[in-house]
Amino acid sequence: MRLHRLTLIPRSPWRTPWQADTLAGALCAVAARTRGPEFLRSRLIDPMLAGKPPFVLSDALPGDLFPIPIWLRLAEWPLGTDLKAVKRARWLTRDDFKLTRAGGVPPPDRLIPDSLVLMNDARRHNTLARDSDASLEDGGLFSRPDAVLVSRRDDNARLAVYFRACNDEATDLLLDLMYELSLTGFGADTATGRGQFDLAGEAQPVPDLDVLPPNANGVVVLSTFQPAPDDPVDGLWDAFSKFAMLGPDLGLADVRKHTLILFRPGAVFRTAGVPVPFFGRALPMDLILPKPTAAELCGRGIEIIHPAFGLALPAYLPAEDFG
Image (cartoon, rainbow, N blue to C red):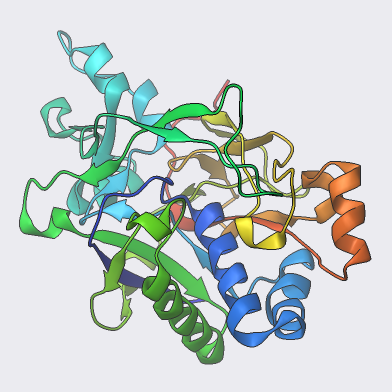
């Protein structure tokens, strides 16, 4: 599964974070809408549930930057380093990311804080009931912020999605689905212009990021994901709770999923020097939906999954253990 990069140009603010699992789910919805449920099941759902996804995505990363590998936060920093600033930092340049993948530690002043995505002032909205499209009488007002990409340089005005595909056919499928998604937008409130983006050219191979560093013994993951039961467990990660929802096109009054525990990009794991192209799994419908919702969809011949795979790059993890 060779590594490629796809560049996206945001054309509007967005409401939904560009996380790999959400993006993969949106592409599944595009496949169902444009190619039909049988295509979705045979080409995406069944392979993903079998642990053989046709493609695996990273989160959409700002410009040419990469997430800080978690182990770097525990490195021995020079005396006088502002450790709070190290903790707040989120991004590395491409060169510094390569340095950390080889076990190196960049100067602390080269760590980039999590300030490349700006949350605009929240706007008030009125909640509509999904079964009637009418406003709720009580408790219907809520606020949601817009997010925009803050550009430090021209390349940071864009987003980069890295991916692996199992073959050329899968690559073509991914690119076709991404193009279809660009026509409607990504995430919430696309009808009001949020989440609009363009594709900047063709996918580009990035073989240099797949080169094994000397003494490679692990991986760093570029995606929001959930490990599979048989994935390695010797590692470091930052877990969080995600309150995900189904898309609005299923005609359900209750679109809530179960709360999911996912890992953020930058997680690292030891793999005994064996290259691992991806981690994670696809969560089946009975694990992500309440029983009544799953039963209703099953009765209508609809199957829902939550793709939670993580794109992995080889790395050398310098600490003897993570204890």
